[in-house]
Length: 247
Image (cartoon, rainbow, N blue to C red; front, side):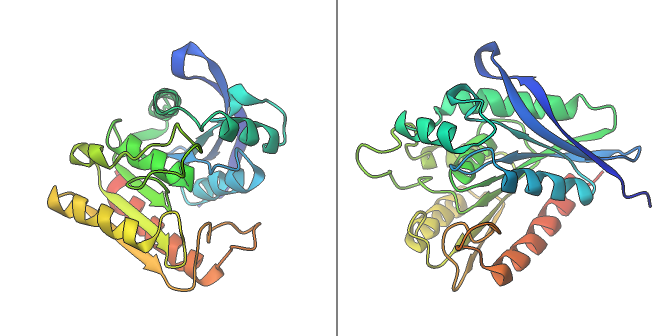
């Protein structure tokens, strides 16, 4: 099997008709390939998230990561744009959904796609993935330690990230949740409450919590990295998307 891939920055037309940047990676075979939208964490559209996007391409997915902080700053470093986004209360939900819908459209327009699109998000992107799974047309979703799905952020902070658990009845695709037992946002108590709501609505989901891991345990460039938990988490991600996005 030919193992080549291509990765590049592209432009997509997001919320309100705004053109924003996105990072796109795909295998160089004929396909058909499932699509994955990668939602970056609060620290921004950084090298680590682009590496995750490429990782999906190496496993046979066409993957795209929209730059959700693009309007706050176009500098190659994500730090300033992420700080501006935080200062402004976070990415507004309607803007996120418009940008995410654009990324989904981009993948569905590919002639070598199989028409099925999933989404994965980390940190703030986990919460946004939960929101998208209740709002947009996805075949599967993965929430990696998404904070403030059920709990509110501290007063005065991230005012654009209010709880979205009230939308759980509209969850329209299978959801995988991967969490750390030592995380404070979301805490094990919060993830348990989310699970109870999903169970009450009869939704298809799996939640897994890893002992010895806290927030951002997938982040290989941070001290929070927990390789053992991340390895098992990736195995669950491949199985989940393989089950729901295959032709």
